[in-house]
Length: 226
Ligand code: DC
Image 1: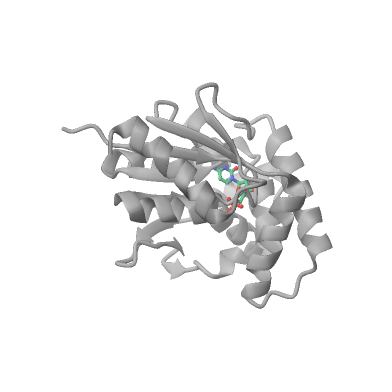
Image 2: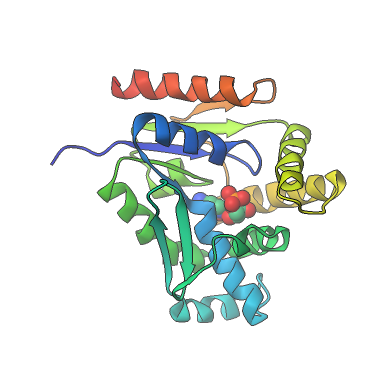
């Protein structure tokens, strides 16, 4: 069988991973896998059941009751299902971001979601975004990009995105949320956020969306001869 293409796109919250990954997927015909959405679905399940997201035992004991699935529509966008219910929109609530960050630090949660992520890379050419794709999930990905930007820039971008969706949050709240998640995601012992040794580090603080996309697209072209 022909070898599949895998592009791992890791980095902190608000670095522009999902927007860039979506554009790269469209341009090269890859499937975009948003792994944050999978952790968010576990976060939503904890939130709905009143399970404290840092309580390792209670979160772990909830996992066997969860049927988590992802499906791509004809528009190429990923939708998330929790026990058969489409929760694609619910998982974007700001409180679910914090729940996702907390439950993602639990090794049992990471193990529970591993196969699902690897299976996507076995079946399709993928651009997969997350925190540990290049380091843990797909350590042999053909291209690894670590996308980052200054926290202030990331907060501003996320704030604009949320405002466009009509979410009534302030810039200060978004900045605090980003700081909390940076600290949480980088300091945990299970698969912490860090660049793989062979990752290309791309700081997009001074780049707009178009320039960031072009930079990643060039890396894809060079690496895979596309
Ligand atoms: O990318 P996101 O903001 O939707 O991710 C939500 C949370 O999930 C994030 O705070 C950290 C966690 N996450 C993770 O630990 N590993 C991944 N591969 C993706 C997300």
